[in-house]
Image (cartoon, rainbow, N blue to C red; front, side):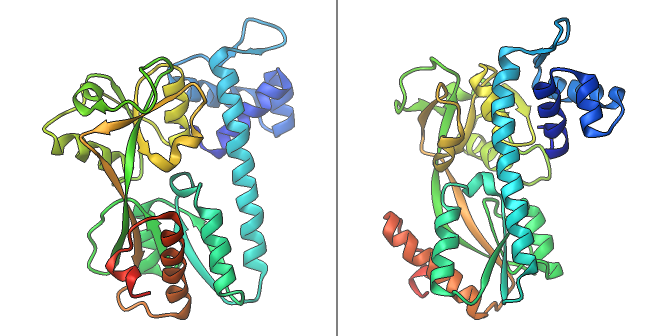
Length: 305
């Protein structure tokens, strides 16, 4: 998927309706700007901008991508401002690595509950993939990580907090919502996987789900982000397996259906061996109290929190 920089480029072109004005606004030359937009279109496999019209207009796919791009940039800018405030604070900090798109629905409640239980500590969220969290833990850049991939590393311990149900995100009109769909059926459809890199990632979790059932998807399309995968699903490109809590990110026309046999994605807490800080204990109590309210079963570690 387009990274943040290229998303800003696309939004500038779409809002200015001109490559020339967008390049001036971004303070870059026009040729590299045009190339970045072409890269996005090539990755998505569809035209986003109708270049033959003056002023430039967006194709239907471009309009959909533009709407989602604005949302992604708004969330990114909000996170950057929050991080700046945290960094400037002089109070004790506990830094949690997390991939927001995977846990976005529950993150605000986790942060609020942590602050309630430990108002003297700032819980800092740092955006990174599961594999990046492992490296950051070993380097001391974060205090704990929240991810979905079972990564084996002798220097890191992991706690599986729960197994979340996966659902199939399907193109508009792909059967009634909430009616189960078989993995064998999904294996015959183009399958969108995310993120393309770094690996291992949620993409490998999904591939394992198929392999465990003796299946291999006939066609795999790898993209960088969950949001891109869902945009392509809404455009009818293929299907995607996503955590049930991520359904809200999908376009209203996307159909989400349970998967048979049942497939799950783990929610894993990564930490250094022997982690015993008061802030880590607060984080465990935060998850324990919220899981009870949400009706989730408690893992052995959370029962002790």
